[in-house]
Amino acid sequence: MTQAGVTAKDMAAHAADTLEVAAIHVSRADSLNTRIDPQPGGRLVIVNATLRTLIRNAYGALPFQLVGEPKWSESDRFDIDAKNASGLEITQNTLKPLLQGLLVDRFQLKAHWETHEARVFALLVEAGGPKFRTHVDESESGMNTSRVPGKVVMRGNGVPMADLAGNLSFHLQRYVIDETHLTGRYDFLLHWDPDATEDSTEPSLATAMHEQLGLRLKTGRGPVQVLVIERAERPTEN
Image 1 (tube, one colour):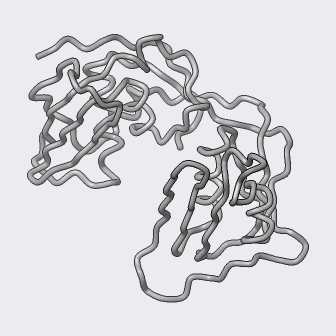
Image 2 (cartoon, one colour):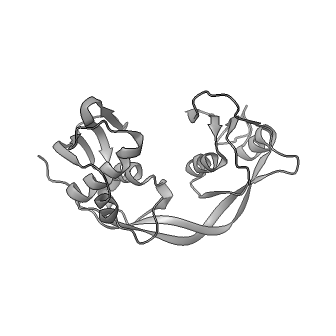
């Protein structure tokens, strides 16, 4: 995450590559699903993306971290076909600065990070200690979350606690600060009912964290970075 006061344009200036946009059009897709798909040869295909989605992917921001977006940022959807000017493959590490440059160039985005005081959750280890294991093998690390009615399943493989806190922030729509003081990478399985009704066959999130992980969330206040959108315009089609 960037430091407060750094604008989108400043960040884009440090990107090693830039996107040459071959086409940008208002999307005619019937679905609400979005696809952001780096392809061979440095090509990037984006289908049915809102400005809000593009900003979130460019800056790694959660929905509650965005402030001052125009009303159309969640309604207007765009298809974009672009190519890395260098021709290099677009990786997970290079995608964000490339998207930042695209937003500055075609959406006239001007934004900056600020730190606000807000309600947060602290992620803590319970007195009995964690109930998950340290990652010890050489298998690929990562976290996968799936959701069906009445159940969310979050599976971590070689994941630091900061990543778990970030994923919980998305589901809770409130910033979660990692205060576990656990510095390794861990394997865990967490499943819960996000609605937690009387008929639920799955536990609530609080119960699931206690029973399955030996962790808990404590409500408090703390610093939260928010991305303030100062300016954004609809792109002209080409």
